[in-house]
Length: 149
Figure 1 (cartoon, rainbow, N blue to C red):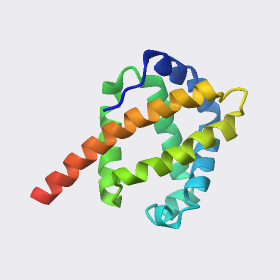
Figure 2: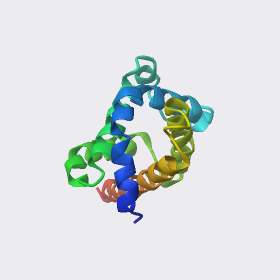
Figure 3: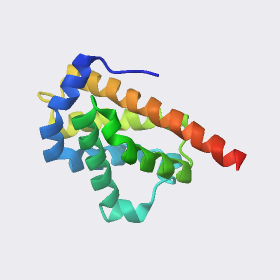
Figure 4: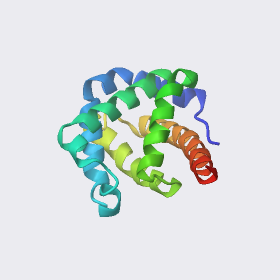
């Protein structure tokens, strides 16, 4: 499982104020990029997209992750809900690169290159893959449990 360096964690935590102000702009831009792939778009609840609920929910999750990246136990219940939702909608490990390819440029788009520097995006890349590995492992266990039941 991948981890983020202490330096990357510090950089991610330092972006929390910008995420609090611009989180919905980031997630809205991320979904616009992500939905350019019709196979990915069909996996999502369009009512939650149209109402803005999903971008708001994801913005809150990203902010909580930035604030707690060094205290992941604080995110246990939220991670459990994400895993359950991902299993319900059929998220697989091969979907995670699509999200990374949409999220990181969306951060730069929303925050600007002077804030979302290459160093910041590299830290967020490390942080994203650390969380993705946690989710992928938990989802694999949930899929196995469902198959066994």
